[in-house]
Amino acid sequence: MQDQPLHILRSVFGYERFRAPQDEVIHALMAGSDALVLMPTGGGKSLCFQIPSIVRPGTGVVISPLISLMQDQVAALKQAGVRAALLNSTLDATTARAVEQQLLRGELDLLYIAPERLMTERTLDLLARANIALFAIDEAHCVSQWGHDFRPEYMQLSVLHERFPAIPRIALTATADEPTRREIITRLGLENARVFISGFDRPNIRYRISQTNAGGSAREQLLRFIRSEHPGDAGIVYCLSRKRVDEIAAWLKDQGLDALLYHAGLSAEVRERNQSRFINEEGVIIVATIAFGMGIDKPNVRFVAHLNLPKSIEA
Image 1 (spheres, rainbow, N blue to C red):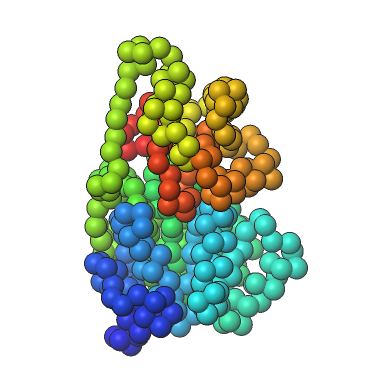
Image 2 (tube, rainbow, N blue to C red):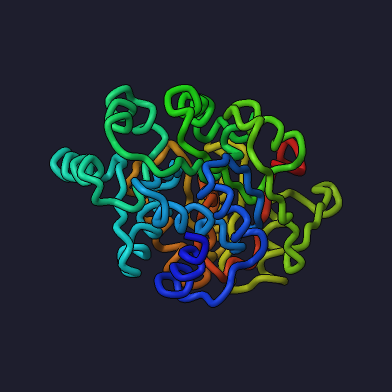
């Protein structure tokens, strides 16, 4: 049992060794402990729950707020030979029932599930009839005050501790200062969890704050910034309101930039099409509210500009 995680790391995922503190987290979960993991983007958080889900009896249930990320991870796991599936709003009723039956028959190593689906009484009853290896709460900062506007269902995830007290839970995030970590622990009932912090400093990222009155309007400063420092680069521009997103995206397009918009007021089809273009094409700029960005897997994003100052530096 002790050597199994390393064997799976090499044979399934193709890595030779763990990064600290992946092995400690994995062994804590395998021993039945809860865990809170703060690890930078790209640091290998997913392996911390994927490997113990494969090793432990039963199915690892992963709560993820992002449909595109769920689809990407399930596809990658299947390609690696892991028995993985997802339950979210993209599935028709027949497919969803088939996945539920796979779960009940013990045919899944990992099941990714949207928080809205998880919180239904029907799904909680389904999980009670299944053999669950662990619960993984991804993007756990959605539990906190500054995250719950995006996914209010995260505020109710203490139900996992109440209904399934014997099943280990792991909460993971790349972004949580000390107050946010305390809030995650309190709201999820993780007072006895082991806490693993490897930091979220990214030396290749730098921050700059500019006053708009120092050089014209904010949108004109944004345009100068893009043209002078990031011509042809992919980037994200955040605004606080949907109306502002619409205005800025239209204005940037008028200036000859390939700008798309993204917010919760758009149809699912438009959001998915714009996100897909941003990920797969070069030089696309997304103008968005905070509904966009979490879990986006695009290695060549070269700038992120906030046209309105967020409520806090942490946000």
